[in-house]
Picture 1: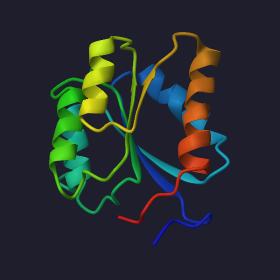
Picture 2: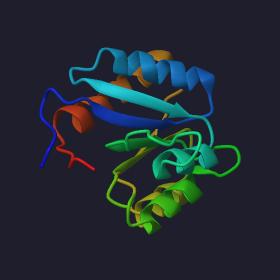
Picture 3: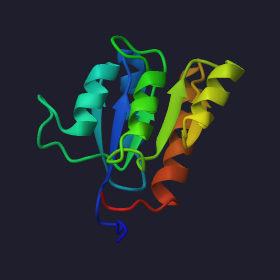
Length: 147
């Protein structure tokens, strides 16, 4: 069973930078596809959210995750590895959205089954354009299974 156009796509943004959170919200606000954005600010909260543990019990699982690598408490690399090792979470697409352009980070992300790796631009307009490009592909073209 797949999502229809009337069902919002649930996105979990795992990001600790207030500025990047605001920019991502701004970019997704004008999305052509309805979306529900949840935000957590560290890796431990991300895992708790994904597993429906307190304080996130009852939270609907996301259809996709936008994951920063450089997070407090548990970094994004650890979050990605835990997700892909968990049978309940391994099929959720994870797009890395980070400041890192390090080839080792890119290779590690794909080795750990990331669906994509995007380096955040520093420029405001470029950042908005980048998030909107992610939205265009992942929210308009790709089909998600209902978890």
